[in-house]
Image 1: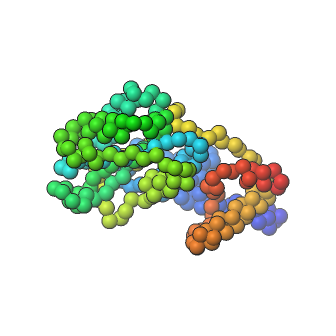
Image 2: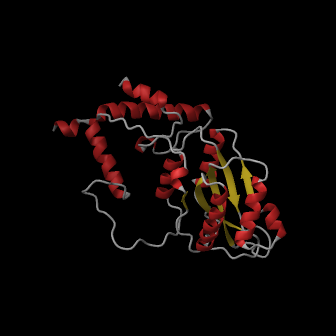
Image 3: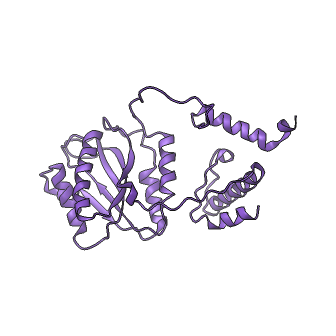
Length: 268
């Protein structure tokens, strides 16, 4: 009887039921998938969540570059071809920059002009680490990608790639949210055989921050969760935004530097 009257226990059961419904329950009692995995056809909510979690584990003081690799008009696109070209291009890059590491994301959009107007065309976004922005780098990336694709289109050599150095972590976070984790547009066609939408190249060279795990009791956890919810609401209200939906079901918050929250946790 006492267990049913405990608000934390009731909330815990509701949360576990929600996770079970959405296939997110990881304990031994949960039903695990079996057999061959089906063909990936959409950039799912679960995949976007996992991607955002990895992005927010990156070190905030790590230097990176934004790199975009596109294809010339007239070149048929598939996920398999894009990944084959990306792998070949990456081998070239790492021969010159051995310490390079990257997070990649495939995006599918309808081409707006040219002979393939309206067709699904894929391109690749990368967060590139371990490569300094130096004279000749942009030209090297343009030429190496141009050769790997076998373009033979001078317009593609001039405008087929983009390299940018972000000024701060807020710019990285905004770029990642819009280009890495955004949902594919419903109006845009999908390239065939896309497979995984994101992944890593030389993941060991990607600068992830060290994870700090703090174990709470249920009472302490809910006290901190309420404080985090209040912070999210106040922050969005300050920016003229309404609170996100289903805020009470959140169990992950991305707050940038977590030092102040770790200090608050100690005082619980």
